[in-house]
Length: 330
Image 1: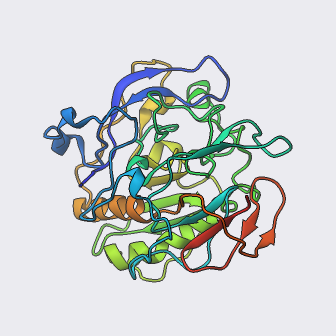
Image 2: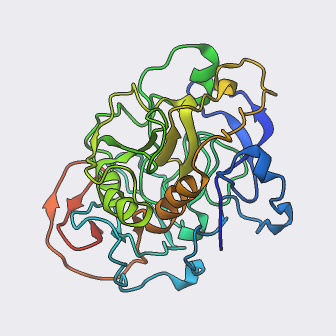
């Protein structure tokens, strides 16, 4: 099933709670295309679950029940071999996710919240921060669980009451917080072949997710540079107003330097998101979107195992060096 970039509906409600994400309803089917080409999108394909927009690109993604029990071997364009842990089970680029969730026990960060329950068919959000939570009809990250195991991205200290109300910059710590699942936030730039030098896309997520996706994107999308490395996110780029798509309960973001979503700075709750550009390389944009959706690390269905790992404090429990796998302490 092909899924282009996410388009937000106009409904937006400014939070009355400091730090709450902008509350906007999400479209049934995300589109990364410019608004001019989005007119033909079928609105009638809504599945009833927010974010269950399926995978994109030409690959076929099964339902949540079709999750890769044994972590089936991904293609050669898959993620890197060094992977990360969350709290319960394993995660891999080939996983379809899991429908099962559990409660984070007392004594751990975010105790009492749910972890797990998100499938690859539900990985797509929109360009609204707080989108991409399965079964949720509003965009927010405040107080929510972790259906995919990873924490939402954060943009550090933000100024301006409007954007502060729409982007939660405090609940999940500083971008340099290495105790978040997958490590501190990192970013990587990508450009389409023969493109304008200012047409830069940036991937933002935890270190392990970014590092894992770089070779997959290079193999699948053939960016102008084959020498791409993840670098620590310093909050200068990407900026929240440059985000064109969120994934995996807003724990992954894709930006475009030439995009500026002015709605984030408006105190008018009815201000629609700025339309996406029409001048970018649509083929490359769609390839980035589909590769992220198809190969981002997801929790595997829980299964008993006794792999040995390195114990880390807090929510991030174990890091294994296993091909395409992430170990979670149970």
